[in-house]
Structure formats: structure tokens, C-alpha cells
Image 1 (cartoon, rainbow, N blue to C red):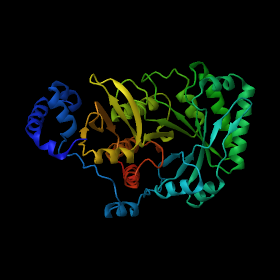
Image 2: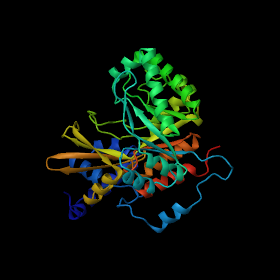
Image 3: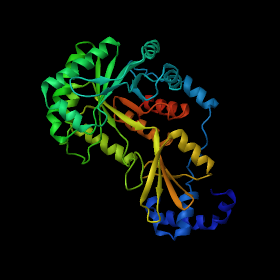
Image 4: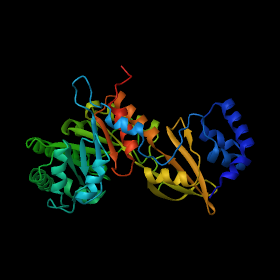
Length: 399
């Protein structure tokens, strides 16, 4: 644990580092690698640009109260953009508590259903009370149907039309029985050879849901290679069938990655959005998924990742505050960076906090996307939620 008294001893080093960075006028993350180790550590941990916002545990303030009361509905008569939130909590009380902390939420997407085998097998039971409460709040409920990231099971279903149709009938029956407003399809880890099969599955499912006035949204990961859409997910075909495509704009560096980095840097997210728009997804059907979490990376002296653990935005804020650690704003990446030493290892955190998330909301607003989806509700503070909501629904500054 670092102490405040240590900071006074490195002030001359920080002044030298600041001058060097100003002269070089390069990205801080790259420039600090040129410094000797003691100076590099001092810069990474303690130097922050003048525009850096102080990171303190977020509490409800007068400004937050005013923001909550501000008018967030477009004045031109257009419907407001989607503010969608996935939720993992179970139990009516837990879900209701989270819903109360997210005013302006207009689509609740609980992870209720899981493909559990062939012949249309699905596990999971929705909570009727939550559905009823959502309708009273004028919120739509789009229940998640996921495949557990099981490509092999998915292939055993998608390769046969009768298996597809049994699963489709079961999904539609559940959606109708529980009076759902929509289904959020989250099939990840699919095989490339199921590209046509999955497009057919989504097309038929959408047609049958639409006949019941139920919406379909489809979650998709970013393309590995921008500009080439030749994997299992045919962007154009899926966007033509579904009401919305949700771009999962996170896990740029993910749990288990050998390299440390941000969960979602601004350039990476912007590239993914542009790729989807260029490969057949209309802007008014594209929802940008944003992360409410970050990784705490444990690295060795060479910078190689030893392990990592996911932290919620709230946990990350508390940790940085407790360690008296300084955050450095990386303007190129659009995220904050901090490092701290615990026992014999260094830890790195690339933090997509309120400032970064507001940049994502600005991107969605200026590109006239359908809205945002947060993974997942309850990991962020109410202040952060309101800031993102307000940014998304503010008038665009781009013509």
C-alpha cells in the first residue's frame, strides 16, 4: 500500500516527466516506457493531467438530483433512444432495487432462458412480478435466450431444420405465455460453418415473433478483422430479420487475455461501430453495448499478465480511492489508467468510468444509433447511469 508521504518525494521527478511529455507530445502510455524504472513508476502512479477528474466514491449530490429531474425526452416528437440494461440478479426484490437506481431505463433484459439441449430444450423461469412492475414503469422486457457459449450444442441444433423449428416454437411459446415485449438472442461462440444456419434460424424466429407483436434483438461480438464479415454472423442478413442488433462493445482485452489493456477503448469501439455500419447494419437498428466493469490485471516485471479479476465500476472506484492511487487520462484510448503494487506484483487497471462511458454515449448519439445497452445493471452507480443517459438523450452536435 502506498502512503501519501511518498508522493512528496517524487515531485521533482514528476515535474521532469511532465516537461518531457509536453515536449514529445506523444501518447502518455508510450512515452513513459522511455523513462528509467523509478521515474516510470512514479509517472504511471502519480502523474495526472490537469483536466483529470478526481475519483471519489460517488454520492448523491445536488447536481445529481438536478440531472435526475432534467428533461430527457426529445422535443421534436421522436421517441427517445433505447436505454437497455441486461440484468443477472434474481428475485423480485433484487431486480426492483436495481430498476429503481436506473431511471430512464426503457428496456430491461434479464438473463432468464438458456438453451439446455436438443429438441427445443430451454431452462429458466421468468419472474412474473418483475414483468408486471416493468409494464407499470412503461419499460419493455426483452428476456435473454442464450446458448451458454456452447458452439457444439448450438451446431447440433442449427444444422437441422427440425431442431431449429422446435427451439423456435419453444421460444415463441414462452414469450407469448409470459407476455414478453421482446427476446434478446445471445448465441456466442458459434462455428463459422453455421453462418447460413444461424441466419435462417434468426429469420424464422423473427417472423414468428413479429406475428405475435414481439420484438427480436440479436447480440453480436465485434468482428476480429474490421471490414470483413465472413464469420458465423452475417451482419446484413441478421439485421434484415431482427428489430435490433446489439454490438457487444467490450472485452477488447478480456479475462484470460495474455496482455493487459482496456475492456473497451474508444478507438476500438468506434472501429467496431463503423464496421457494423459498413457491413449491413443500419444505424437505427444498431444498439451499442457498453461495459460497467473493468479488469484488475496482475503482471510480472516484463509486463506479462499472470492473472486478472473482473471488478465492477463501483469496486474499481473504491479500490483506487482506498489505495490513494492517481488516475492518468489516456486521451488516445479514452480511458483512465492506474497501477499499484501489492506484495511483489504490479497491478494495472484500465478504467472505463463515467467519463469514458459518456464518450460512448456521445458516439451513439452523434452516429444516430438506436441506443445503448449496459452490461450489466447494478455494477455502476446511479450518478454514472444518469450521466450516460443524459449524454445519450442530449441534442447532437453533429449535423
